[in-house]
Figure 1 (cartoon, rainbow, N blue to C red):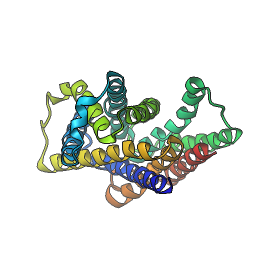
Figure 2: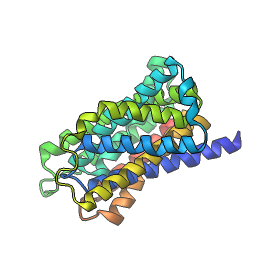
Figure 3: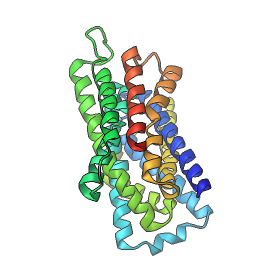
Figure 4: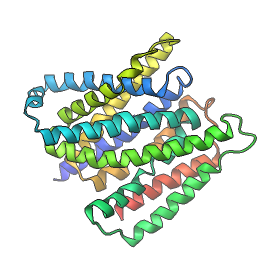
Length: 295
């Protein structure tokens, strides 16, 4: 039990780092690669990489034994996490930058308790309210990080990006519950992940039109690297939910805004205007989501 908990925690942190790396890489091809195209490529790479891994591990044969109920959970989780959620997430990154968008998307931890109360009839702890206040302060700081002298992004685009990122948070919240149901129903995170990625690839197939137009070798390299990064992060997330509880996994994955800040500073600091408000906001959001889940 202790070993499984440790493994789940390690996989959750790997997920956080993978999500952050993916968002930072995609920021490098902003304006060249459209969000739908990024989501499609990520889904295809996920299918290829994970299906190959399952074949090597002898797990692919379990595809034939999935029940209709389990398959429906996998498809729903795939559409939420890989199609709609990923599209909204990438769109937010394109509009307001990885650091700000990821900090807003991290608010999914606020919606998870609400879903648990409404759907699972759980009782919200008083301590969660305090954590929510911390998160709201963080979000306020991020929202107010825009100034008239900040020419990196327009005012209208900035606030639309905030709303889109909030939408991604809601979708990912439902996706977390569906992912848990999918992994538990199928029994194999590899197979559940493959089915979910296949479903999202079908939905995102129209993105093939215009794919590659205007891409340079560097753009392809970054896009494929982001796809691999997200595939690894996705598998780590689905696997973490097999070994550990949602209560443990969710707060650890929400560390990705801090990973994003670090990677943004190291690799794309000339592309993103990281200021004190953004840093403090991302830090408070991360602290808040962790406190809300652990309380």
